[in-house]
Length: 368
Image: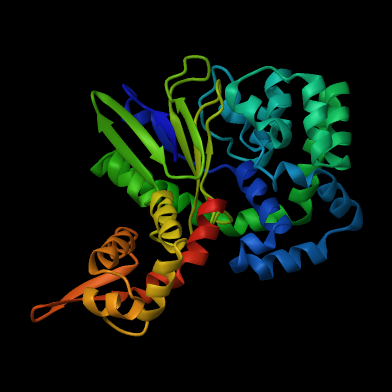
Protein backbone atom coordinates (compact mmCIF):
# COMPACT_ATOMS: atom_id res chain seq x y z
CA UNK A 1 0.00 0.00 0.00
CA UNK A 2 1.21 3.49 -0.77
CA UNK A 3 0.36 6.87 -2.21
CA UNK A 4 2.34 7.47 -5.41
CA UNK A 5 3.27 10.83 -6.90
CA UNK A 6 4.52 10.67 -10.49
CA UNK A 7 7.34 13.20 -10.94
CA UNK A 8 8.66 11.99 -14.29
CA UNK A 9 10.29 14.92 -16.09
CA UNK A 10 9.84 17.25 -13.12
CA UNK A 11 12.86 19.58 -12.58
CA UNK A 12 14.33 19.35 -9.10
CA UNK A 13 13.65 23.04 -8.46
CA UNK A 14 9.91 22.26 -8.64
CA UNK A 15 10.22 20.16 -5.47
CA UNK A 16 9.97 22.71 -2.67
CA UNK A 17 10.12 22.68 1.12
CA UNK A 18 8.11 25.47 2.68
CA UNK A 19 6.10 26.52 5.74
CA UNK A 20 2.33 26.75 5.88
CA UNK A 21 0.77 28.54 8.86
CA UNK A 22 -2.73 27.39 7.85
CA UNK A 23 -1.63 23.74 7.59
CA UNK A 24 0.02 24.06 11.00
CA UNK A 25 -3.19 25.50 12.41
CA UNK A 26 -5.02 22.46 11.05
CA UNK A 27 -2.48 20.14 12.68
CA UNK A 28 -2.78 22.04 15.96
CA UNK A 29 -6.58 21.79 15.87
CA UNK A 30 -6.27 18.05 15.26
CA UNK A 31 -3.92 17.66 18.23
CA UNK A 32 -6.37 19.66 20.33
CA UNK A 33 -9.34 17.49 19.28
CA UNK A 34 -7.51 14.13 19.36
CA UNK A 35 -5.04 14.30 22.29
CA UNK A 36 -4.77 10.49 22.37
CA UNK A 37 -3.05 10.64 18.96
CA UNK A 38 -0.41 13.00 20.34
CA UNK A 39 0.68 12.02 23.87
CA UNK A 40 3.75 14.25 23.61
CA UNK A 41 1.47 17.30 23.23
CA UNK A 42 -0.78 16.51 26.18
CA UNK A 43 0.40 19.50 28.21
CA UNK A 44 -0.08 21.93 25.32
CA UNK A 45 -3.51 20.53 24.46
CA UNK A 46 -4.73 20.64 28.06
CA UNK A 47 -3.56 24.22 28.64
CA UNK A 48 -4.90 25.44 25.29
CA UNK A 49 -8.31 23.80 25.70
CA UNK A 50 -8.62 25.24 29.21
CA UNK A 51 -7.97 28.74 27.89
CA UNK A 52 -10.58 28.70 25.11
CA UNK A 53 -13.61 30.93 25.52
CA UNK A 54 -16.89 28.96 25.51
CA UNK A 55 -18.08 30.46 22.22
CA UNK A 56 -14.88 29.52 20.37
CA UNK A 57 -14.83 26.05 21.95
CA UNK A 58 -18.40 25.48 20.78
CA UNK A 59 -17.63 26.59 17.22
CA UNK A 60 -14.56 24.35 17.12
CA UNK A 61 -16.71 21.43 18.24
CA UNK A 62 -19.23 22.31 15.54
CA UNK A 63 -16.64 21.86 12.78
CA UNK A 64 -14.05 19.50 14.28
CA UNK A 65 -14.82 16.71 11.77
CA UNK A 66 -12.83 18.83 9.27
CA UNK A 67 -9.63 18.01 11.17
CA UNK A 68 -10.41 14.74 12.99
CA UNK A 69 -12.00 12.14 10.68
CA UNK A 70 -9.78 13.49 7.91
CA UNK A 71 -7.64 16.58 7.42
CA UNK A 72 -9.63 18.73 5.03
CA UNK A 73 -7.75 20.25 2.12
CA UNK A 74 -9.20 23.65 3.03
CA UNK A 75 -6.03 23.93 5.11
CA UNK A 76 -3.91 23.90 1.93
CA UNK A 77 -5.72 26.19 -0.50
CA UNK A 78 -2.55 27.21 -2.36
CA UNK A 79 -2.40 23.68 -3.78
CA UNK A 80 -5.75 24.12 -5.53
CA UNK A 81 -5.28 27.56 -7.09
CA UNK A 82 -4.92 27.38 -10.89
CA UNK A 83 -1.87 29.25 -12.10
CA UNK A 84 -0.52 29.71 -8.57
CA UNK A 85 3.07 29.39 -7.45
CA UNK A 86 2.38 26.19 -5.54
CA UNK A 87 3.83 27.72 -2.40
CA UNK A 88 2.01 28.47 0.85
CA UNK A 89 1.45 32.03 2.01
CA UNK A 90 3.91 33.82 4.29
CA UNK A 91 1.22 34.50 6.90
CA UNK A 92 -2.04 32.97 8.02
CA UNK A 93 -3.90 35.95 6.52
CA UNK A 94 -2.21 35.31 3.16
CA UNK A 95 -3.38 31.70 3.15
CA UNK A 96 -6.90 32.64 4.22
CA UNK A 97 -6.95 35.00 1.23
CA UNK A 98 -6.01 32.00 -0.91
CA UNK A 99 -8.87 30.05 0.64
CA UNK A 100 -11.19 32.88 -0.43
CA UNK A 101 -9.90 32.57 -4.01
CA UNK A 102 -10.59 28.83 -4.37
CA UNK A 103 -13.38 28.28 -6.86
CA UNK A 104 -16.66 27.15 -5.37
CA UNK A 105 -16.51 23.55 -6.61
CA UNK A 106 -13.01 22.98 -5.22
CA UNK A 107 -13.91 24.56 -1.91
CA UNK A 108 -17.02 22.39 -1.55
CA UNK A 109 -15.12 19.23 -2.47
CA UNK A 110 -12.47 19.99 0.14
CA UNK A 111 -14.98 20.96 2.82
CA UNK A 112 -17.01 17.78 2.21
CA UNK A 113 -13.97 15.53 2.27
CA UNK A 114 -15.01 14.13 5.67
CA UNK A 115 -17.98 12.36 4.05
CA UNK A 116 -17.15 12.30 0.34
CA UNK A 117 -13.44 11.51 0.35
CA UNK A 118 -13.79 9.01 -2.51
CA UNK A 119 -15.38 11.68 -4.70
CA UNK A 120 -12.76 14.20 -3.61
CA UNK A 121 -9.83 11.99 -4.59
CA UNK A 122 -11.50 10.96 -7.86
CA UNK A 123 -12.25 14.54 -8.89
CA UNK A 124 -15.99 13.93 -9.30
CA UNK A 125 -18.28 16.97 -8.93
CA UNK A 126 -20.19 17.30 -5.68
CA UNK A 127 -23.55 15.53 -5.87
CA UNK A 128 -25.83 17.17 -3.28
CA UNK A 129 -28.13 14.20 -2.65
CA UNK A 130 -25.21 11.81 -2.20
CA UNK A 131 -23.33 14.31 -0.03
CA UNK A 132 -26.34 14.66 2.27
CA UNK A 133 -26.78 10.90 2.48
CA UNK A 134 -23.14 10.33 3.43
CA UNK A 135 -23.12 13.22 5.89
CA UNK A 136 -26.24 11.85 7.60
CA UNK A 137 -24.34 8.62 8.23
CA UNK A 138 -21.70 10.62 10.11
CA UNK A 139 -24.09 12.37 12.49
CA UNK A 140 -26.32 15.43 12.92
CA UNK A 141 -23.48 17.97 13.11
CA UNK A 142 -22.04 16.81 9.81
CA UNK A 143 -25.49 16.77 8.21
CA UNK A 144 -26.25 20.30 9.38
CA UNK A 145 -22.86 21.53 8.11
CA UNK A 146 -23.43 19.90 4.72
CA UNK A 147 -26.87 21.45 4.37
CA UNK A 148 -25.43 24.87 5.16
CA UNK A 149 -22.56 24.37 2.74
CA UNK A 150 -24.75 23.26 -0.14
CA UNK A 151 -27.19 26.14 0.46
CA UNK A 152 -24.61 28.88 1.03
CA UNK A 153 -20.99 27.91 0.25
CA UNK A 154 -19.87 31.55 0.43
CA UNK A 155 -21.37 31.95 3.89
CA UNK A 156 -19.69 28.78 5.17
CA UNK A 157 -16.35 29.89 3.71
CA UNK A 158 -16.67 33.23 5.54
CA UNK A 159 -17.68 31.40 8.73
CA UNK A 160 -14.59 29.18 8.52
CA UNK A 161 -12.31 32.15 7.90
CA UNK A 162 -13.64 33.90 10.98
CA UNK A 163 -13.20 30.71 13.00
CA UNK A 164 -9.54 30.40 11.94
CA UNK A 165 -8.93 34.09 12.65
CA UNK A 166 -10.39 33.71 16.13
CA UNK A 167 -8.15 30.67 16.73
CA UNK A 168 -5.20 32.79 15.69
CA UNK A 169 -6.13 35.47 18.19
CA UNK A 170 -6.88 33.01 20.99
CA UNK A 171 -3.84 30.74 20.83
CA UNK A 172 -2.32 30.08 17.42
CA UNK A 173 -0.41 33.35 16.92
CA UNK A 174 1.66 32.60 20.04
CA UNK A 175 2.05 28.96 19.04
CA UNK A 176 3.17 29.88 15.52
CA UNK A 177 5.78 32.32 16.85
CA UNK A 178 7.16 29.53 19.02
CA UNK A 179 7.38 26.82 16.34
CA UNK A 180 8.02 28.86 13.19
CA UNK A 181 11.79 29.19 13.62
CA UNK A 182 12.30 25.44 13.97
CA UNK A 183 10.07 24.65 11.00
CA UNK A 184 11.86 27.22 8.84
CA UNK A 185 15.22 25.68 9.80
CA UNK A 186 13.97 22.21 8.87
CA UNK A 187 12.64 23.40 5.50
CA UNK A 188 15.98 25.12 4.73
CA UNK A 189 17.90 22.00 5.74
CA UNK A 190 15.82 19.70 3.53
CA UNK A 191 16.05 22.13 0.60
CA UNK A 192 19.84 22.31 0.95
CA UNK A 193 20.04 18.51 1.11
CA UNK A 194 17.99 18.29 -2.08
CA UNK A 195 20.42 20.62 -3.88
CA UNK A 196 23.56 18.96 -2.55
CA UNK A 197 22.74 15.26 -2.56
CA UNK A 198 19.60 14.86 -4.63
CA UNK A 199 15.96 14.00 -4.14
CA UNK A 200 16.43 10.47 -2.77
CA UNK A 201 18.49 11.77 0.17
CA UNK A 202 16.07 14.62 0.82
CA UNK A 203 13.12 12.22 0.90
CA UNK A 204 14.99 9.89 3.25
CA UNK A 205 15.47 12.83 5.59
CA UNK A 206 11.74 13.59 5.47
CA UNK A 207 10.82 10.06 6.61
CA UNK A 208 11.89 6.46 5.98
CA UNK A 209 8.29 6.02 4.78
CA UNK A 210 8.93 8.36 1.81
CA UNK A 211 11.05 6.90 -0.99
CA UNK A 212 12.03 7.58 -4.60
CA UNK A 213 11.43 4.93 -7.26
CA UNK A 214 13.29 5.27 -10.57
CA UNK A 215 12.37 2.51 -12.99
CA UNK A 216 11.66 2.19 -16.72
CA UNK A 217 12.42 5.86 -17.30
CA UNK A 218 9.84 7.02 -14.75
CA UNK A 219 10.34 8.68 -11.39
CA UNK A 220 7.84 8.31 -8.59
CA UNK A 221 7.65 9.32 -4.96
CA UNK A 222 6.12 6.59 -2.80
CA UNK A 223 4.63 7.38 0.61
CA UNK A 224 4.12 4.21 2.63
CA UNK A 225 0.60 4.46 4.05
CA UNK A 226 -2.41 2.21 4.62
CA UNK A 227 -4.04 3.80 1.58
CA UNK A 228 -3.94 3.47 -2.18
CA UNK A 229 -3.65 6.64 -4.21
CA UNK A 230 -1.78 8.12 -7.12
CA UNK A 231 -1.39 11.52 -8.65
CA UNK A 232 0.90 13.46 -10.95
CA UNK A 233 3.10 16.41 -10.07
CA UNK A 234 2.95 17.61 -13.67
CA UNK A 235 -0.46 19.27 -13.92
CA UNK A 236 -0.49 22.38 -16.11
CA UNK A 237 -3.68 23.63 -14.45
CA UNK A 238 -2.18 24.14 -10.99
CA UNK A 239 1.49 24.21 -12.01
CA UNK A 240 4.00 21.38 -11.93
CA UNK A 241 5.60 20.56 -8.61
CA UNK A 242 5.44 18.93 -5.20
CA UNK A 243 5.38 20.82 -1.91
CA UNK A 244 6.72 19.39 1.36
CA UNK A 245 5.48 21.09 4.52
CA UNK A 246 6.98 20.37 7.98
CA UNK A 247 4.78 20.28 11.08
CA UNK A 248 5.66 20.35 14.76
CA UNK A 249 2.19 18.95 15.56
CA UNK A 250 2.23 16.22 12.93
CA UNK A 251 3.60 13.03 14.49
CA UNK A 252 2.53 10.27 14.03
CA UNK A 253 0.70 11.53 10.95
CA UNK A 254 2.33 11.71 7.52
CA UNK A 255 -0.31 13.24 5.28
CA UNK A 256 -0.49 13.47 1.49
CA UNK A 257 -2.77 15.68 -0.61
CA UNK A 258 -3.30 13.79 -3.87
CA UNK A 259 -6.67 15.00 -5.15
CA UNK A 260 -7.00 15.45 -8.94
CA UNK A 261 -6.44 19.03 -10.01
CA UNK A 262 -4.53 19.88 -6.82
CA UNK A 263 -0.78 20.19 -6.48
CA UNK A 264 0.58 17.21 -4.50
CA UNK A 265 1.55 18.14 -0.94
CA UNK A 266 3.29 16.03 1.73
CA UNK A 267 2.90 17.18 5.33
CA UNK A 268 5.60 15.55 7.44
CA UNK A 269 6.31 15.66 11.20
CA UNK A 270 9.45 17.14 12.72
CA UNK A 271 10.65 17.54 16.28
CA UNK A 272 11.81 15.41 19.20
CA UNK A 273 8.70 13.20 19.25
CA UNK A 274 9.30 11.84 15.74
CA UNK A 275 10.11 8.13 15.54
CA UNK A 276 13.14 7.93 13.20
CA UNK A 277 12.37 4.54 11.65
CA UNK A 278 8.64 3.71 11.48
CA UNK A 279 7.66 0.18 10.45
CA UNK A 280 6.50 -0.24 6.89
CA UNK A 281 2.91 -1.26 6.20
CA UNK A 282 4.16 -4.47 4.57
CA UNK A 283 6.32 -5.44 7.57
CA UNK A 284 3.49 -4.74 10.02
CA UNK A 285 1.14 -6.94 7.97
CA UNK A 286 3.71 -9.76 7.89
CA UNK A 287 4.11 -9.59 11.66
CA UNK A 288 0.40 -9.61 12.38
CA UNK A 289 -0.17 -12.48 9.92
CA UNK A 290 2.70 -14.41 11.51
CA UNK A 291 1.22 -14.08 14.99
CA UNK A 292 -2.31 -14.96 13.86
CA UNK A 293 -1.47 -18.69 13.79
CA UNK A 294 -1.98 -20.44 17.16
CA UNK A 295 1.07 -22.70 16.80
CA UNK A 296 3.36 -19.76 16.06
CA UNK A 297 1.93 -17.94 19.07
CA UNK A 298 2.78 -20.95 21.23
CA UNK A 299 6.28 -21.11 19.78
CA UNK A 300 6.79 -17.44 20.58
CA UNK A 301 6.01 -18.19 24.21
CA UNK A 302 8.85 -20.73 24.25
CA UNK A 303 11.26 -18.65 22.19
CA UNK A 304 10.73 -15.65 24.48
CA UNK A 305 12.28 -17.66 27.31
CA UNK A 306 15.47 -18.61 25.50
CA UNK A 307 17.06 -20.00 22.31
CA UNK A 308 15.87 -23.34 20.91
CA UNK A 309 16.76 -25.61 18.02
CA UNK A 310 14.24 -26.90 15.51
CA UNK A 311 14.42 -30.39 17.02
CA UNK A 312 13.81 -29.08 20.54
CA UNK A 313 10.73 -27.18 19.39
CA UNK A 314 9.44 -30.24 17.51
CA UNK A 315 9.76 -32.36 20.65
CA UNK A 316 8.10 -29.68 22.80
CA UNK A 317 5.02 -29.29 20.60
CA UNK A 318 4.74 -32.81 19.18
CA UNK A 319 5.08 -31.82 15.53
CA UNK A 320 7.68 -32.69 12.89
CA UNK A 321 10.90 -30.67 12.38
CA UNK A 322 9.79 -29.65 8.84
CA UNK A 323 6.59 -28.20 10.31
CA UNK A 324 8.63 -26.26 12.86
CA UNK A 325 10.90 -24.99 10.08
CA UNK A 326 7.92 -23.70 8.11
CA UNK A 327 6.59 -21.82 11.13
CA UNK A 328 10.03 -20.42 11.94
CA UNK A 329 10.44 -19.29 8.33
CA UNK A 330 7.26 -17.19 8.63
CA UNK A 331 8.45 -15.69 11.93
CA UNK A 332 11.87 -14.90 10.44
CA UNK A 333 10.35 -13.22 7.37
CA UNK A 334 8.35 -11.09 9.81
CA UNK A 335 11.64 -10.22 11.56
CA UNK A 336 10.34 -11.52 14.87
CA UNK A 337 12.96 -14.24 15.41
CA UNK A 338 16.75 -14.00 15.55
CA UNK A 339 19.06 -16.86 14.56
CA UNK A 340 22.57 -17.72 15.77
CA UNK A 341 24.84 -20.73 15.61
CA UNK A 342 26.36 -22.59 18.51
CA UNK A 343 28.66 -25.24 17.11
CA UNK A 344 26.59 -27.43 14.83
CA UNK A 345 23.32 -26.22 16.31
CA UNK A 346 21.15 -23.42 14.94
CA UNK A 347 19.35 -21.57 17.74
CA UNK A 348 16.22 -19.47 17.33
CA UNK A 349 15.03 -16.84 19.78
CA UNK A 350 12.21 -14.31 19.88
CA UNK A 351 13.21 -10.69 19.21
CA UNK A 352 11.46 -9.28 22.26
CA UNK A 353 12.12 -5.64 21.29
CA UNK A 354 10.46 -6.14 17.88
CA UNK A 355 7.42 -7.76 19.48
CA UNK A 356 7.17 -4.98 22.06
CA UNK A 357 6.90 -2.40 19.28
CA UNK A 358 4.01 -4.07 17.43
CA UNK A 359 1.32 -2.18 19.32
CA UNK A 360 2.87 1.23 18.78
CA UNK A 361 3.85 0.32 15.20
CA UNK A 362 0.22 -0.60 14.49
CA UNK A 363 -1.07 2.66 15.93
CA UNK A 364 1.54 4.76 14.12
CA UNK A 365 0.85 2.97 10.84
CA UNK A 366 -2.94 3.37 10.89
CA UNK A 367 -2.57 7.02 11.94
CA UNK A 368 0.17 7.77 9.41
